[in-house]
Length: 101
View 1 (cartoon, rainbow, N blue to C red):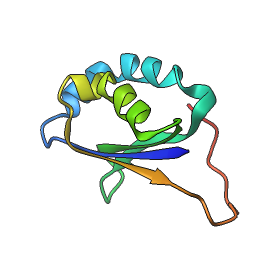
View 2: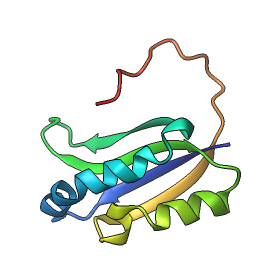
View 3: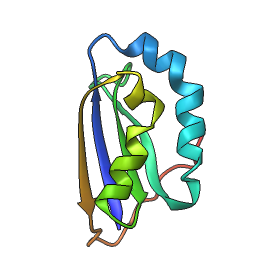
C-alpha cells in the first residue's frame, strides 16, 4: 500500500535542510523501487522549501513509520509536524510527474 508522508518544516530549518539534503536524497534512494513520488513542498511564490511530500509503497503502517524514523530530516529535527496516511489512487492519472532530479 502507498503511504503518504506529509511533513512541514520548522520555520528556521532552511539551512539545516540544505546541509542534510545529500544524505536525505541518499536515504530516499534506498526506497527508489517503491517510490511513487517525492519532493519538496514550496511556499506560494515558489521560492522556498517549506516541507516534504512522499508517496512510498510499504507493506503496512509499522514499516512506513519505522523507515521514516531513520530519515535524516526526521532524525535531525527539520520537521515541525509529520503525518502518515495510507493512500488509494482512485483517479486515472492524466498528467505525469517530471523525471526525477
